Every structure is written in C-alpha cells, then in structure tokens.
Amino acid sequence: MAERIIELRDITKSYGQVYALGGVNLSVDRGEVVGLIGDNGAGKSTLIKILSGVVRPTTGDILVRDKPVSGWSAARSRDAGIETVFQDRALAVQQTIVRNIFMGRELTGFMGWLKVNKEIEEASRLMREIGFTSKVFTPHSIVGQLSGGERQGVAIARAIYKQAELIILDEPTTALSLTETAKVFHFVRQVRASGRSILFIGHNIHHVFDIADRFVVLDRGKVALTADRSAVKSAEELINFMEDVAHPGGLPGLREAGEAEQQAR
Amino acid sequence: MEPDLESPLRPHAGSARQEWKHPSDHWLRGFVLDNRASLGTLAVFIVMMAVFMVANPTVFTTWYLYSSVLTTLPVALFVVVPLVFVVTCGEIDLSFPATMGFAAWVFALVVQAGYDPFLGIAAALVTGMLLGFLVGSLVVYGGLSSLIATLGMNFLLRGLIQIINEGKSMSLTSLSNSWAYKIFSSQIYGVPVQIFWAIAFVVLSAMLYNRHRFGAQVRVVGDNPDSAQQMGIDVKRVRVKVFVFVGIGAAIAGTFSVMINFTWWPTAGDGYLLPVLASVFVGGTPTWGGIGTVVGGAIGAVTVSFIQTGVVAAGLSGFYVQFFNGLIIILSLLGHKWNQARYR
Image (tube, rainbow over all chains, first blue to last red; front, side, top):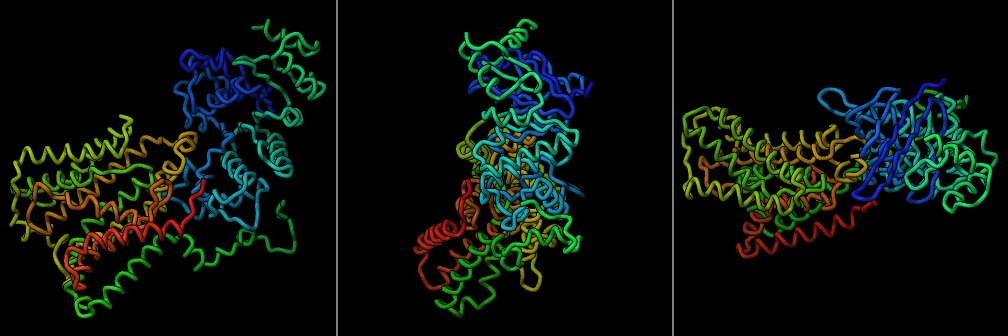
C-alpha cells in the first residue's frame, strides 16, 4: 500500500454557530491525484485552509505520514511538505517574481543576508521547469505586470520548489485560457509521474474528471462520496451524482456508492 | 512556449541568462527602472538647489551653510530610515519624537551620574528598543490602529518626561571631553563627523531593506499580509520588529541631538515629527505599503532640511519657509504619482 502523506480524521470547523465542516475524513497517498469537488459552500475552501495550516480545525486529528501532529500552522504544513496554490494565488503583486517564489523561506546566508544570485538562478530554473517562461519577463519582473496565467505560473513555481510531497491546487484553472489550462494539466501529470501527490480542487468537473485518480465529493460540510477513477464511467455521472445529492430522489448508480459511504460512518 | 533546453545550436552554459534577456536588462535602464522613486527625489533636490543657487550664489557657495545643515541632518536621517520600513510594512509610527526624547533623557541621566557616555549610549539604545517593542506590541497584539495608538503613545511618553522633569533641561558640559563625543560628534576638516555615521546607517539600512530577509519580509507583509501569513511568515512578529527598529533609530537620533548641543531638553525630538514624516513621502515611499525606498527617504530628508536654510539664505523672510515646505511636498507627491504605478 502506498504511503499516506496526510490524513484528516473527523475534522470539524465551526464559525460561531455555523458549521463549515461537520466531520470530514480525507487522506492523500503518495503519487495520487485526488480531485476534490463540491458546490459553493460545500466547505472546500475551509478544508484547504485547514490542510495548509492557515485555519485550525475546531475538532479532529491531522496525521502526517501516520503520525498525529499538534500545533498545526502554515509553517508546520510547509515543513511537512505540503504546498498550497491558493485560488487568489496569494501573491504580493508589487514584488518581483523572485520575492514571491521565496516568500516565507528566503534563501539566506550569513546573518540572514539574502543569497540574491542563488535566488535568481533557482527562480529561473523553476519558471523554465514548469514551462511558464517568456521573453518579456525576467525573475525581476513585478508580479502585478503579469497576466493571470503567468501569475498562476509563479504560484506553482513557488509550490514545486523544495520538492513538496503534496501540492494543493485550489481552482487552478479558473480564469485561465485553454493553453494555460493545458499547461496546468501537463504540470499535474508531471508531478504525479515524479511520485508526488496532488489535491486538485475544481469547479469544472470535466477538468477534475480528466486529471484525478480518485474523487472526493463534498456536500454541506460532509464527504458525500469517495470513488476511484475506475468506479466512475464519465464526468456526467459525477455531475448527476452531485445534483442528486443536492436534490435527492434522482438517478441510481453512484447513488448506492454514496449511501454505502454514509452507512460506513 | 516550452523552452528548447536540448537545442544543440545553443551553448548550454549561459543559456538561462539569454532566455531572460529583456530590454530592461541593460544595466543603465534597469538601474533607472529599479530606482525610479529615489532618482525622482534626487531630481527634485537638484532642481531646488539650482533655484537657490541662482537666487543667491554667494551664500550657496560658502561651506558654512552646508556645514550647519550637515550638523542637524543626521538626527533626522536616523529616524527617517526606520520610518521607511514602517510605512512599507503598512503601518505608521508617530511616537518616535517621544522615544527620541525618552532615550536621550536616559543617556543624559547616565552621563550626568558620571558614567562613561558609551554606557549612556548603550542605555539609550536599550530604552529605545524597549519603547519600540512596547509601542509595536500595543499596535500589533492590541489590534489598534497604528496611526492613533502611536499618536497616543507620543503624548503619553512626552507627558511622562514632562511630569518627572517639570520642564527642566539638563546641561552636560563634561561631554565635550569624552571619547564618545570625539568619535560621534566632532568635526574633521570642518565636516561634522555625525554625517558619516548617518551615511553608514543609511547604507546599512538600504542593504537591510533590499538584501536581507528582514527587508524582504517587511515588503511582503506590507504588500499582502494574508499571503505572507499563508506562506508561513509570522506577520505579527515582523510588524513588531519594524517598531523596534524605529525605537533603535530614535534612540540613536536622540543621543546625537544631545551630543550636538551638550544639553537635553524635555522637548527633545518634538520638532522632528512633521519634517521627518514629510521626508519619508517626499522620498518616494508610497502610503499604501509594500514598496519604498530607503535612499529616497534619505534624499527626502536632505531636501526638507535644505528648504528652511535655503529659503532664508536665498534672501526671503522666514515667513516663506512653511509655504515652500508645503510646495516641495506637494510637487514631490505629484511627481511620484506620475512616476510609479500601483499594481493590484
């Protein structure tokens, strides 16, 4: 069995009276691409924030490589090899590409002085690696001057630096052109081929269906379905299932799998 | 476009450099683009001096005028520079005049008690750091608006000084024989020594701003605190650190102001509030945070210091000083607005 990178057990998160997550179990193994889908308000963003350490769960356990962790934080999440490409890309737009790639883990030498040349070299290498190079910008370019796709490239370059074990892509194809989307897909396959894992969150179920090995459907703060790629015949089936969950009384098929999931808990 | 890394036509070594070739890679153009704000400030300064020069050539070619500006300018520089960090970080600190007065007071007390002035400087620095930490913690951990909270702290600390001293100043004539005075505040060939210390401070701080983890994190936090948080930067700690830095700068400035005059006044530092703040923005650091220029701020301080001396020396009455102060500030801001775009 593949090594388990991270596991969430019975995670709940409440904001005052409102439950964003009501007992979610989720795990990601080495080398798999997990597609996380769900309607607006299903709790996807909260789940990502918990995985990336920005938000702490109200209750529940987080296990990194089967070991429970305490004091979960953004820095701890990164130390555990989890990198997140946030939907808003979390870029500092007035700074250079280099400064964004090394945000929070500046390459420093003696007494905290930056290794400027090393940073530029590494930034150039990363940008080339993911194929987001262009002749019009340099590692010194200000991120605010870049297009949406190029900004996504910077965010992804930041995530693959340091050989992260798990990369979380939050709606990475939103607002991207077709070629840019293709680049993101190419990148995801590349990462999987190198034995690392990806958690791919998407609104566009066709995109998620094309790329994921396993699907997790989130609905109103709970996991409604976990299904392997082989168990799902088409993207339409997934869409139907999601509609069915939202408006019960619909189609059979995956419905039974979903019910089995409910009973298991 | 996928880069063709295996192309045999291109020598492998150095190909990375070539791929990134860009018009602004030309060193001069790159330099101008990177230092737009500070070069703009320098241009304002040069134009202003040229106008003064034309208005009264005899006065503006005598060394005495420059020497007198160079005596007091360093005090301003020691606080302008840390304030560039604070503004870049998206905060403001109006409590530095009181910190200056407070740290200088500690320095004066130590010297008056008969201890070596070096010990006094150390005590002043510790005081400045503590006060900076206090103000910073109040703003950051207390979740207060830095504009109002630091204004309050300025009154509070100044009030404390006034209550305890009841308005009495301290004269420190023994200072003139001390080594500390010779090293920090005497003259070499008519040039006040403190300007060299101030320049060293500006250069070191500019490196800290551009080439150190501290400066990098200050800029990122000011630019997008949420991203910084998501990327694991301790945003609150970075914010407290900039206030501590202002405390250190204010302590050095306060100590220098005492050494220049051999006297400590309970109002020491008060007159610096507005000129120093103006210098930061005249220097080209925008108000919205994320970017700024230390060297520009320093040039801004030079500009602001010369306005007062210059207006009077040019033959205008002292009544014109405030008018020209305002004129230069407004013109600089307009210039910077045109000069730099804000990215969102």
